[in-house]
Image (cartoon, rainbow, N blue to C red; front, side, top):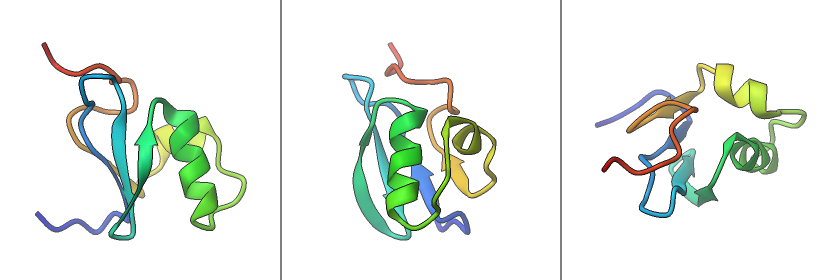
Length: 73
């Protein structure tokens, strides 16, 4: 499935971490919105914080939105 959003956050793994891909590259595992904000800042969007991550239309959330950090039972 192609997407026009440059940041993709995948469903939670068993440990609650979510894989994050920016611009086609896997950048790490996030365990909260703060981690995603750090990845986005490293990619060049300085000044991002948790609220920017939660509200941004640039992020595609798969397997649950920014409030989902546990794997489905």
